[in-house]
Length: 227
Image (cartoon, rainbow, N blue to C red):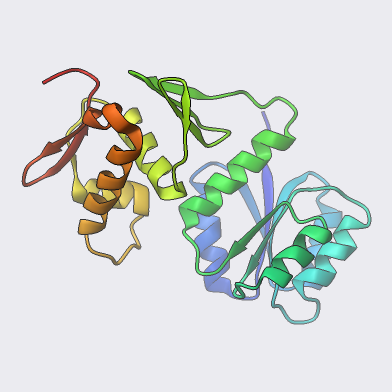
C-alpha cells in the first residue's frame, strides 16, 4: 500500500518541522510549503495529497485565499491552523470548507489524532475501533465513552487518559510516563495535573472509577480485577 501524503503549509520552518516529525512517526509522507502560492503549486503537482494542514497568517497568499484556490477544484480535507482564537475566524474557515480548525499553540499529538480521524472518515473504508474494559466501552473513532451502556461526557484529555489506561491494563504507570504519553514530552506542567484529571475521571466513571488503582509514591494502574 502506498504511503499517504500530507501537505503542511506554514511560513515558520520550526512549526513545519514539529508537525512533520510527529506525522512521520505515523509513516505519513510529508510535503512542505512556506506560503500559500507554493502550497497551491505543490498541491496541483501532487494530486495524490490526502490532507492539507494550512496556516492562516502567511506571506504572498494567506490561508484563507489558499483554501479558496484549492476548494475551487478539490474537496481534499483541510485542517486550518491559526494563532487567533476568534470565533469569526473559525466560522469563516468552516464557510470556506475547512474540515477542522485548531488554534495555536496546540499539542502535536492532538493534531495527529485529528489527522487520523479525518483520514478514517474520508477514506471510505473507516473501521470502528472499540475498546472494552469491564463495564467501560470506548469508541476511538467517535471519541465517545459508555459506562454500563450509558454515555458519559469526557473532556478530550480525560478521554485520552482513559484510553491510555485501558490500552495498558494491568501495567503500573508512573506519573512521568503518563505525562509523556498523554500530555506529550513538551508539557511543562506539574505532575499533580494527573492526579486532578484522575479524580475527575473517577467521578465521571462512577463505580467503574474503582478500575483506576492508586500506586502510592508512583502513579496508577488500571485493572478491572478486584485487588
